[in-house]
Length: 363
Image 1 (cartoon, helix red, strand yellow):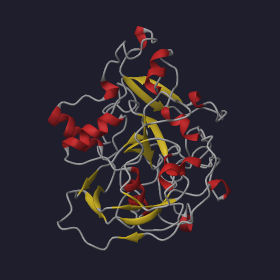
Image 2 (cartoon, rainbow, N blue to C red; image 1 turned 180 degrees about the horizontal axis):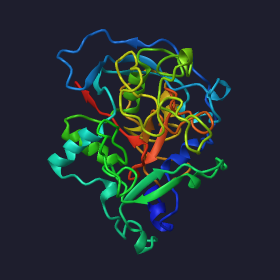
Image 3 (tube, rainbow, N blue to C red; image 1 turned 135 degrees about the horizontal axis):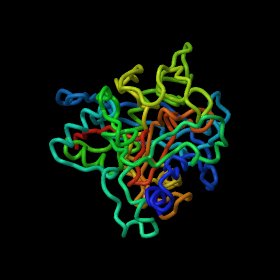
Image 4 (cartoon, rainbow, N blue to C red; image 1 turned 30 degrees about the vertical axis):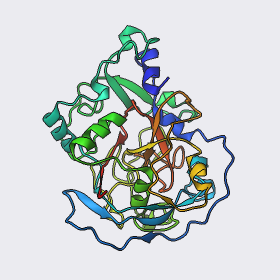
């Protein structure tokens, strides 16, 4: 049963989110670590000018994955076994959106096509046979800060399924996008992201493309900007400050989602590749995928992800990879804004910290 199905089964005010399982560690043995060696970018420039709003990612060979961060400063409690073994990957060059897709960009798509997102559709009884009919209402998952400290093992305490919430009503049916046109679009399920990308003549990035782009040409660094979370005391991404999951302190300037491009770009010119909102990738999720492809010891070319999805936490759910972390990530709970880390989400589940960006391939 997927996350959205769980929401239909419980009472309306129940709190469920796909994000909760980001911290469930794989039971697989940790493979030996391969040294994070240098990125070797391609040197052939693109043959034409960049499409509007996109930047060139040269591709090349790099070390994909990350070491166990728990011993690092600000590394957090999660060993991230699914991000190992570190392995060498080669990818072709491609164009990538400079920012996450914004509300205004998604609005243009919806107005042109009449598309209705998953969160806006009435759930079908046959898809959720155990759900009371009164719970079969459109909506999505919204972060709700707690008034006081709570145990971090119980994620139900800070997530709520909110009736009427969707990309155009981000906090519920009475909310609007006024003043939020330049914010990343959220409450996007996987098929919603694919529909936009297809309309725009683009694709969702593979996990390997996303990580190569996020590294910005740097090698072996925990963040897309280097080794320190706050170089010279400066916040480089919109992540969580304060005692999670209470209302954040906004030391980085924002409580909740920030407009795009509020933090410095990485060396490739990409904004918000860490924090702000999680981003969908095309790959299915499997915790031992890296071990499978690294077994040959060859450099893997343009990996497309596993052929089947599997998450030990929810074996029957179909999941795709998320990357980049969000405004809710911190070293108290989730440091998956670190550049080699991985997230995952059930394909029909959106939330108010999940969006996407697109790529455009030459092949």
